[in-house]
Image (cartoon, rainbow, N blue to C red):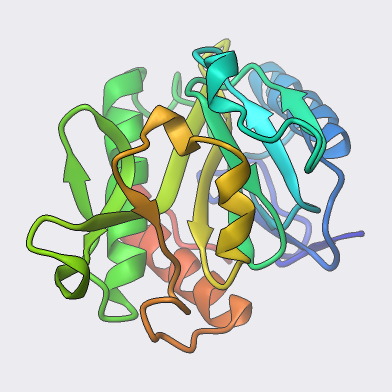
Length: 227
């Protein structure tokens, strides 16, 4: 069940924030996102940032290569309209579905994706983790010098879709998922590097801690503090 974190928001520049109490089935989440995005475009609902977890599953973005699905029977696989390739979602990973009206804010897709990247990096900094970007590699990365001079792991992914200048889908941040679950795919088509999480990096953050950090840093990046 989705529990609102704000009180009956008006149609203002302050998005509504929600958090799910239990893992949300992927198809249900997509259906709700599409309905909310349509309402935002029509001006009948406020923007929304929805924080949730999914049951273990793989998603295939619009650029997914079937060869990157290593174990197609391990978890359910969903084709999705977001950009990107194969990703994993599951318990211990915070997914943030972001539904914003770019026509009202800034109709610039590249700038929006950059803001999502900055948001993730700022959130990681709250836990003393330095997130970095890499040319040609989507998502946020951390250096792993203990694994080698050039070793890096991915800690957060980005995949967006935009319809009528309203965004949906969004980002995922690995808090404490089962990292073995990522081995059923080539995450985002990149096989040369690994995947990590806050827990894997020795940060004992709870999901509630991460939610607080996401809310605080969202205001810094997007200029909207949740009520």
